[in-house]
Length: 417
Image 1: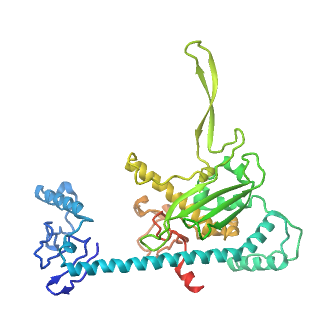
Image 2 (image 1 turned 180 degrees about the horizontal axis):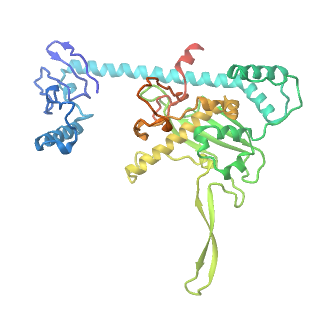
């Protein structure tokens, strides 16, 4: 909760915003502060006293329960301060909301223009993507200049690198380029199964495009291009991500939903299902028969059947199911953003594994337990060491549908253009 310095306005003192009802908020209209007992420093237990509720006296436990109950009831509720203001002051408050509406409209326009800037530079990069695809497929040979530039980049990363001869050679396709690149992404490596690999060996390109400017909702599309294969009829599998029309509270695009291509599986080749043979007995004739039954299974290709966000009318979904659905939506959206922002533009870094140095997944602090210092064999010593190890931060758009940076449009980049 935030707290503000009291501001005098005539006979009115306004020490708190509407959402901080627990701070002192005496006002001239005679409203009293919420009746929550004070917890002052004088009442805090000494450091050596136990905070275990089982060690509290009955009175202390009752007081703690009272405070917690009152806090839970009051969080997010009005303190009554705004309602108590004179009508003229209330009009000023409403006017500020009107000013904010104008600010929001400008932020929407700004984000739309940033999206147009992304489209512009994607068009400028298309010839480079086409050149990349020609080299990967073996349709074109690498030039001397391209080999030399790549060698210089390798030397910069590793001073001990031995440059390759830069003379031009016959074209040579790079086998399983995109399968390898996808497997070197932390999130995708967890959903690509061995069964999927047979189909993904036929993946020849991944392309990014943006929805037209006149589309009802802004968004982007990831296209997976396949050669003929034994698994499905489609040459292209698309995944389209839609943003909401207006930016979110943080000023960025908010994820709305995703739409995937329906995969036309060849007979008995559906990688999203497992098949098992079961015996059935006829109750009347006592004859038996074999029945082939399918059940869903983990597969990368479930990516093209994205989870559907719950609607406001959804009432029959419990909290646990809702939390699980939100996690699936977050993962689905994050993979889409990573394909757009990282894997497609830096495919060679994912193929070589260089991107793994920077692609550290965010992990919740709650997932870790504190460990005691161990001896040298346990690798954790240590009373003498004051050094700290800084882990690489995850780079790219943050997780979540909430749109904290959902559009992956960097304001600084927009300013520099």
